[in-house]
Every structure is written in structure tokens, then in C-alpha cells.
Length: 330
Image 1 (cartoon, one colour):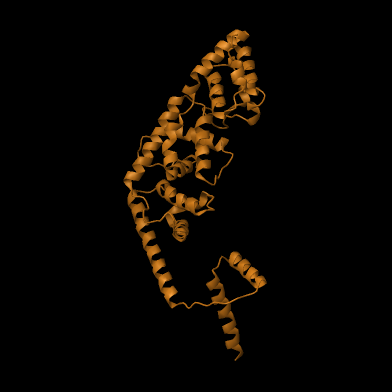
Image 2 (cartoon, rainbow, N blue to C red):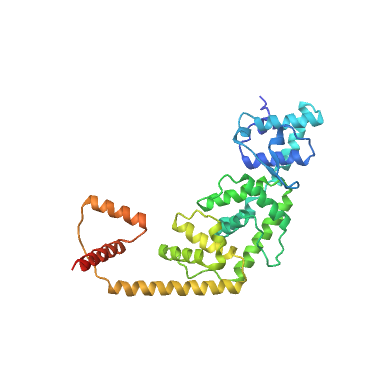
């Protein structure tokens, strides 16, 4: 008994991979096919006539919707039979991989989370801030940034996986031949390497020191020429995210290497001064042990949270207030 070969139409109807779906849509578009049903999947970005974004919804991957759209547009344009449509799909499947950016080209982003954060910062800000004469195709960079902004459903991802997904999604949705995508991602990788060679990383910042990362982040936010950091509205809810943001922004920051070195020296000096003051203050402080009611403890915790204070700071403040009240009545 012979086994019937699965038709290309059936394979297309069973497609549930967004990356592959975008490749199929790209193939139809590159064949100069007049788009009818697929016109809602290839979007001409407003005010940018030469930039198109490919969009695939969940509905496109349900019930063979994508296959139906492709068949309608191809048959309407070419007037071909069912057999000829199978031949068309055979060529489309054959060329599929040549339309998908290999994830091996993005492995450097997975190997180094700081580099992933750095590239995410670049793609999610409109301003092209490279003033270093490096070989970057700014027309293509601007295009993928516009696409990234259009398709970005999570403008502030909370981890490296989310940022990587945003980057990959932007390149997949950018309607352009694969060579252009490969060239741009390779140029950006070279730029990352050059940035690292020009200035040493902030090696004095310890990955496991939460107090230090908070201090450096606050120092950055107050540093005059780092004003762009405030405008980014980053989601920095965990220590790891703060650590990655500090190092990524340091490389993203548009200044000459000498000024980055100066910043690192000043920030490190300020950190050493803080730790010295803390050690000195700790030596001068006296430990107290006491018990308070559960209700008072809850109230105290509420005050500490609302005022962003430490327990010793609250106690010292209350003691100071009471001391002054007693002194004034005598």
C-alpha cells in the first residue's frame, strides 16, 4: 500500500511558526504578486514609503488562514490551477530558509546579555547616535528601527529573553532580502566589538553587589551628560536588570572613550568614598536589641517603604524629634 505524500498546501495550512509564516509572505511579495488578502500582512509604514513591515497574527496560524490568503492572491494574480499552485508552493518551501535570518548570526546576543541589552537600546530609540565613522548602513538601521517600533508589543521587556525576542522579531518583520539583514547584523556585531576594544568594561562593578549597582545607577542618572538614560524609562525592577542596564548604557552612551574612562574613575572614586563613610559610621554606631508589637512592626514597615528609609534612619529621626520636644519644654 503506497503512502500518499503530504501536499504543500497541507503543509502550509499546518504552519504554526511565526518566523516561517513571515518568510512565506515575503516570498509572495518578492514575486511581484499583487497583494489582496495579504495586504493586511505587509504594512507600508506611515511617512516611510520604502519601509515595509510584515505582520503575522495568531489568527493567520489558525485553520489554514495564511494558506487561504496566499492561495487567493496567487490564483487571482496568475490564474493557475491547483496543480500549478502546488508547484508554486514547492518553490516557496525550497526558498524558505533563504528568507529567514539564521539565529546563529545572533548567537553573540545570547552569549553576552549586555550586548543584547545594548542592541535593544539602539533599536528602540529613534536617534542614530553613532558619531564614530564606523561602517554602518544607517538607511537600513533606520528601517529596522522603524519596524521594531511598529511591531514591538512589549516596549519595555523585563529580561534578556524579552529583548532578544524583540530584536529577532524586528529583523524577521523587516521586509527586505536576507543579504541586507545579514550585512546589518554583522555590522552591528563589529560595532559592539569595536566599542569593547576602545574602552574597558566597568570591571570594578561586582555582579553580585546589589548595593553597588543601585549606587552606580543613581550616579548615572545624576551624571550630567548621561541625561538620555532618564529618557529611556527602563524597567529596572531586579538587581540583574540594573547590572545589565548599567553596563549596556555605558557602551551605548555617545561620548569619546576618554570621557567614559573619566566617568568610570569618578564613579569608582565616589563609590569608595561612600563605602568609607559607611564603614566609619558603622564603627560609631551602637547596636540595640528590642521587641515591639506586631501592629507597631507593621506600621514601621509601612513607614520604611513609603519614605524609602532604613530602620536605623527612622529610629534616629524619631529619637531626634522627641529629644527636641523634651529639650524645648525644659
